[in-house]
Image (cartoon, rainbow, N blue to C red):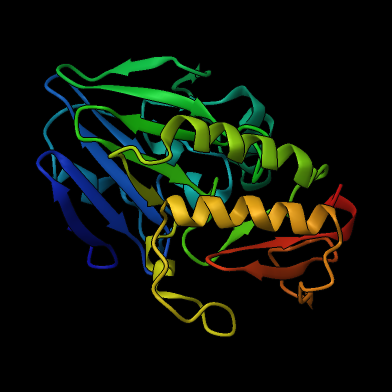
Length: 262
């Protein structure tokens, strides 16, 4: 097993796999096959690590197509992805000279992926990317959120050619809250170690929860209304191509441009 990955068993037949860059993947095993939710972007391929955990055939399900979640997707025979992020995946493959001969399966709201004795359900959650999704596992009462709500330290909104307006993102948060607030589902993010904070930003333990969702809705309102109580911290980071700011409220935070705040 590759030593650059840290593997934690969440419960029977479900594992959290983290690379050295704080990227998180999740392996969910059924009776007939297994699904790798995201692939991380570690220095070494995740495939050998996954094969050491199950003898079932493994397919990939992407919460979204950013490279830190999709780096090794092309090494697996089947990739499930929302069509809103398909062009982003193809663009990254083209830039890196990757040719994929496997199967691409488009997934949409409320569709299910049957693993044999376990069905994963798809929930659309655009915002971080157009095709971001949340994956529900009703059997274990776990949900795998990718970067849709961030991972404790906040959600990166200021990415892509056409970043999502905050008012639209707020509607997705409200829809999510209506369906899952107070439920017994546990949320797992796409960068689980960031729940422990990021130096220079949040420095406290902040796992994904109903409270994060609630505060994110309030933060959206404050951004839309240009609340003077907010502190805007200009960012100059390579992964944020636009002129973006870091703003936070309670347990919620995001990287956003002022043009999105409408």
